[in-house]
Length: 267
Picture (cartoon, helix red, strand yellow):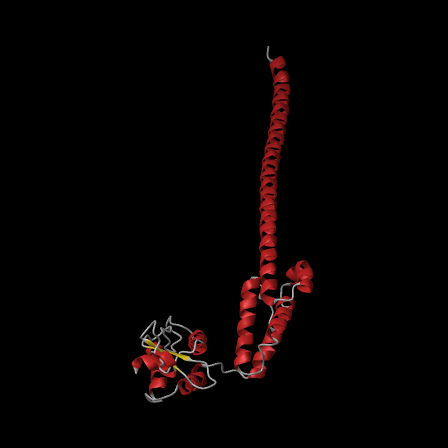
């Protein structure tokens, strides 16, 4: 009987790994049933602690869902990852709460608070900060767009073109001036920011070399000015000494002239 069941494929056990089973449903993708509970980064909801942010924690959970882990495994992984107030939020839902119930509750407590329209307004109004490099600017822009997708006001289909356009138009004017041809020819957002990052790096290296040369010239110029000033000071001192000597010589001559009549009067 066991051989017949095995031959007909009626068992849901994986012969290569007895610890893994699959949930089979007609027309559905099999979900992984395993005794191993995947690890998710710890999340407590306390911003003063150095644990994972909610956005990153939620991303890890979404990845587990896409990997087709079973409902029970994902729920257990979530409960094990939660600490502090976040753990209490899940606890109040009860031990039989479904994954979607837990995620909806967590989103309502720790998710993005801004309205979708406000997030998109921020997306279109933001530009590269003065001290921000191009890669940091692109990552910040991506994060804003991700929040907009969560709120349902942005789509995956438009993501590449919207990010590509806004990223380049929000760059510093100098970077736009030297990368315009890249924007016109590269249609992929990730490829565009890689190319601009390279151009930015090369430009910064040239600027650093130029600044070093200017600094060197400035130092040489300063040293020359200092030397020139010292020479001028010495020249002034020499001139003053000459004048003093001339006055002394003139005084001696006058003294000698006064002494001569007195000497002539003596018998």
